[in-house]
Image (cartoon, rainbow, N blue to C red; front, top):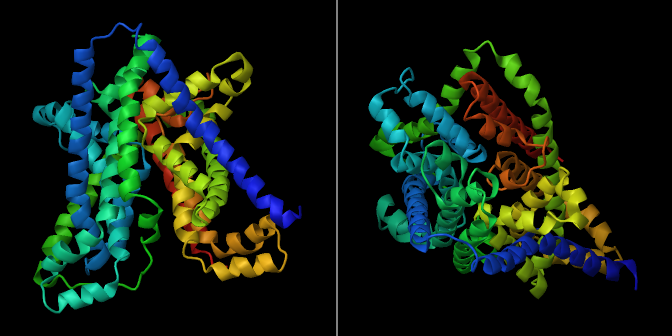
Length: 514
């Protein structure tokens, strides 16, 4: 067979096999081991049900908070002449790329006795379920805002213009924009719920018992009981399947293909409401970035910067190295699978659904599955090396390398690739000479997205990071209980700086002209 014929199916098959290894293998092994351990585990089903239900309710409350703030803010940022709209969007979006645990740490510095909001009442409110909902709600609101903006931007402007001739803007938003953007809003709710349910660092810091934390305690804490942990994972798999069904209903390729197609949108004048609305929006933005200011103040007020940074240099290197490798692997594989997905290959659709399932599966379950699959004599050389972090993170964030690129490729005129194929160009040549140059910005954006999510990850890798190879976020979390507050704040500020530099580098690359 000629190179132009065998390259595409072979390369696509290799990428699909990699997804099966990093996504499906942990979930399958987890289901088998959890089912076999269920009959021997000694755990109270009633307490288990109560804890699971309370965690679901908490994640649901976080979702309501995020959507309640993010949807109106997304419409305002996408459609109105809000003052400082671009700066507000940048500052508001940044907390999404930072571990929520660091936001909780910042709120602690604000609420403690000598903090800007310090009072007994503020501290009591923070350390409880209400504080957990508030912290996670503010941390995940940018996801709802961004997806709302994308959903609204994907609507045909002719529909808006026609509606505005006979109705007020508020009616247009309620009757036209939000109903048409419903798939994006549903996807926002799904993403926020999945991230809130998986969160481990914030609930443990705020002393709130949650279901994923119970799994962590039985696999890596003082309550070590792997049989009970496997039993606890069974409901997580059931929840993941329910979320996957919802995702396929509202968040598939059809939804993404409609997002962000047009950018020439009219700005609605707010009139006399312009400044009151601007003040309200900027208060939301300030609430998102205030914890960073508190952490920075705590770190810079100390004379122990060198004491904190020097021992953390290996962790910084581990974080950057693992994030870069993960982003490169996921983006390269995602580009191959995105092309197959756009071409409507049946196998590629199944792989895409599997990658989405791995993303919305609670991280405690996925991390447990990674441990089961790779913690064996034959694969010990991977499990005890930093490569296991790449394997685990690639499994969870593979969908971030497939869906955005598939959405972009789906809007590429097919005759370009057809002409190159007819001229005898091989698959790799078409990728390197046509697809990559045409979609350089989208590829860089996808790489950056995966990299920052790998940098912020705590809940996935905390169960299987190799000794001496912990990422910076794991180091911060493990030192938090007994480390000096100034040292913890310094490391947190370092984590925020790494994220900001990664985003800035990505934006600089995106801004360069070809």
